[in-house]
Amino acid sequence: MDVKLRQKTHSSFWLSLLVLAGIASIAYADHLVASVSLAFLYFLPLALSGLIHRLRTSLLLVLVCVGLSDWFGSLEHTGWQHGTRNLMALIGFTSVVLFVHRLNVQRTALAAEVHAQAEELAKDMKLAAEVQRRLLPQHPPSVPGFDIAAQTYPARVVDGDLYDFIEMQNGNLGLVIADVAGKGVAAGLFMPAVKIALRASFNHAGNLAMAMTKANQVIYELTDEERFASLFYGILDTTTRRLCYINAGHQPPLLWRGSTGEVVWLETGGPVMGLLPDVHFETGSVELLPRDLLVLYTDGVVETHNAAGEEFSRDRLLAVVASHSGAAAQHVAETIHTSVVGFSKTGRPEDDLTVVILKAE
Picture: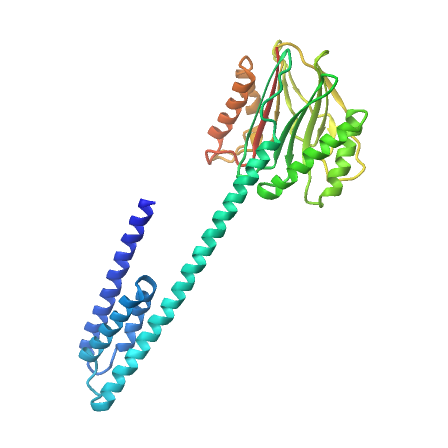
């Protein structure tokens, strides 16, 4: 705040100096050109004065300009014509100052109103972001035999990424990661609808494919043709350690086989959610073995660009996962974020970035 005040004071000083220099220059030129009055040129520094000075300061400068005009100006008018010329100059200069000063007052009032509205909007955005964060799981669930972590990094205050853990009555665990089309407020407002549609559909469906079909229909009816969400939903049987999943147009999760180094991309599923009605999904299935590492992520990870225009890509993600596969799930999530930020040309992800890590022990 002090820096801004010093900058404003410094700027005002130089503008005031410019006003005085302008008045002095016009007076000198008026003195040199004796045959023609240059009094009309005083309008320029006086208009600038009306923008930067208090009204009484500008009116004082009006009197100075009238006096200089009378002193250095043309001597062709005498008597009552001389007085009339000075009166007209006084009226003209004063009118300019009053007009510009009034415009400046209105501009200042408008700027204050815009600033107040911007602050109110920022507070609303902060509140919306807080509400959105509360919709996400506060802590990953504790599941015997698995280490779970999740992190989300919004590109803006409000983001369109979603992750969720659904603990089922039979002991199984639902894993969700989704990316709503777009960024910012519009995507953020759509995100809760996706979560509600998923939870409601899975409570009343007999299997994974049917639940996804129901959720897609709900999302389709809630949105227009420009709104949709890519989504991955998996159900982990905590007893058999088998993961049944559907990938609805989402970035394919990476399954790193810790014992062999084999890589599996989980792509089985169908189209994105909410774009088409009456779609059907295919269910995939994999078994999670000890030391396996499952990485769910949004496109903010792999589609971030560096200064050369290259994407972070799945290959770089795989390299990060492979080199940190022995670390804890939380460390892997943080390392992926750090790697993407370091790779980015702007020093931050271009899009919302969310990572969910499931490590089999």
